Length: 175
Image (cartoon, rainbow, N blue to C red; front, top):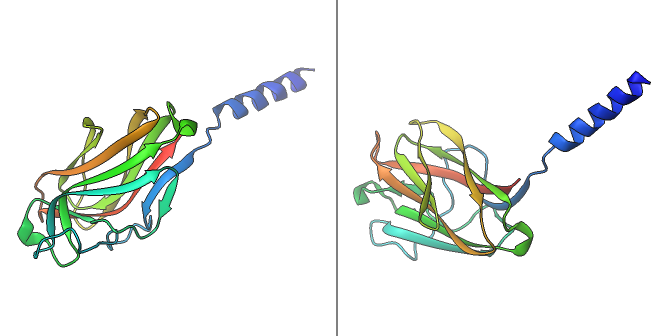
């Protein structure tokens, strides 16, 4: 009898603590390599720099292994190259009703000691720094987002050793 009760309690505990995570946005390779996200030359000046780059992904879920967005962030135009870079990367997306008001977590991998400010719709959620020559994965809670359009901003906000850093991938997960 006691064994049956303990078995039932264990089953209930394991089923209630298991969280199913769902990818709703994946931009990049998620390989932890030094190669950045893919780039396009259309919006950049002759040195490959733009102050703010806006990438519209539309309604989620979206997975793009090679999006045409800058994977290099910098404030120093001289540090850019023909692949392009930006001071701010803005990713516009639409949360459908199915994912509205659920907890959303952002993970991203980056290399470089420079500081990033992570914002959604202008609200700061984190300031993140990394290390030179080492890709690190960061996890940031974005809270619950309403149905509709939102903008995720990753802004280069403070210098580090090289005044630039690479982003390998950006991922949003619904918990």
